[in-house]
Length: 194
Image (cartoon, rainbow, N blue to C red; front, side, top):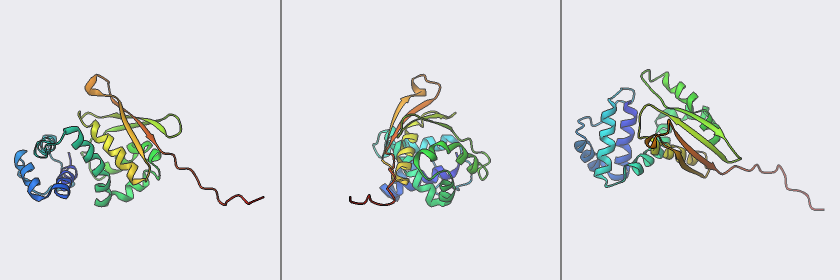
């Protein structure tokens, strides 16, 4: 994975738990790097070791950690200069989810070794969709839940995410039910009194 991901893990730990905790996580993961170069690729194993070490060091459930990281990732990447790219992907939560693959294609211009996941958003009833997640790396489904929740925050849209199908349980890809509050337009003017 690219250093941007590892740096985000570091920053999330430092922001929430302090520099000393980050040092313990890094040591537990047997990672000597203190700061990561955002556009430099690093072995996936290094990222996995950091996540596992953080889970142990913080005495936190791995799924909860991945979910929290997904939510953190949304604000982190926007603050790291990717906000304008994110703005181009949509102005509402459902529009953004439909454009995730296009967003990854744009990001891939700067990250030539990027192997992004693929998403397919399937609209159901108003305020409801299924999000299909295809990725060669396993075990990141909780992060997707956090990402969608983080995007809900970005768009000020209350959202609930539930995993319906899991690769860990034999499905060929992960599927999430996404239920979100539909913004109701305001009338241009109040109706006049009779």
